[in-house]
Image (cartoon, rainbow, N blue to C red; front, side, top):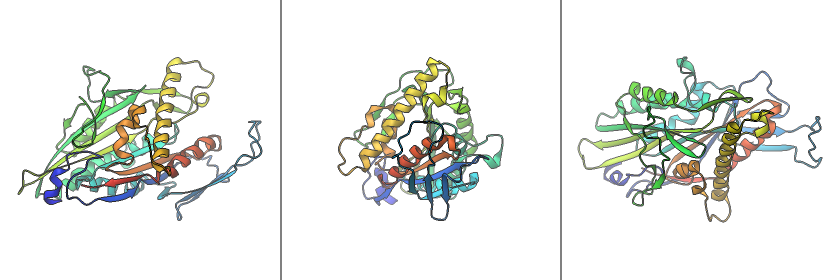
Length: 367
């Protein structure tokens, strides 16, 4: 840290002067959703080797799949969480990133997967059960615990909370809807950080204050019921802690970092999500969700291709907001949530393919 940290005014993607620069790949974990119908013969989990093998059996229900279709895939990850507790998930996925954020290094933790695979439980948990709280409330607790251990520094922490619904950004901390505008994602040319102009920033001085802001925003998220999940979030949500620190000795040096906690809407096939019901609203939502996740995948493909040329960040609000987390100045962790049931095998394979490719995305993490 020291004097070099004063230039780090950006969030993910900013470049300070004199900091330690570290090239690192995105850390990727897989988490299985517990189920009594886990398809052990088709989804083989090796937690010791952090590996997943998919062995697809011959389709028996006249799906029309060609006989020459691939039947086996092997995936390697940084960690596989199988029958893991909420504490295990936090320790494995988030603890290091959260601590680094308090040290001035930007961080993003993203939960990705099909609808009903456990993303929101992983990130938010059960607000009525302290033991089952998710990564976001645990991260908030750790941020303020770490701050308390640094009495030589002054900290200011601010929270923002947005959702991206039908390709529009909504401010979840604007209770009255007075700021119900179509927010724009812009890049500060000086710091190269992505920011959403006009989004509410709420000062939070304690863990309790930050949790109250989080719960307030949760009440405003758009939720709908469909076949895959009776309480399905229909939007991408991003809760961010903006951390500023100054030395009590050198008050002119300000070190800034951001911690993004991202719950992505579920990827899904329309027929599975909607079934035979003709619901134009759900159909529109699913179309926008799948479009944004498709462009997220395209960004990952472009970032990991042999010739890194155009990255289509600007094609959707989601990829534009996450630009800093994908190939930028950020410690990024992806938690790929999968269902272990045979009927969701195609979606599981798709999730694991994206997750494995994400492991090759390189970020530059610096304070």
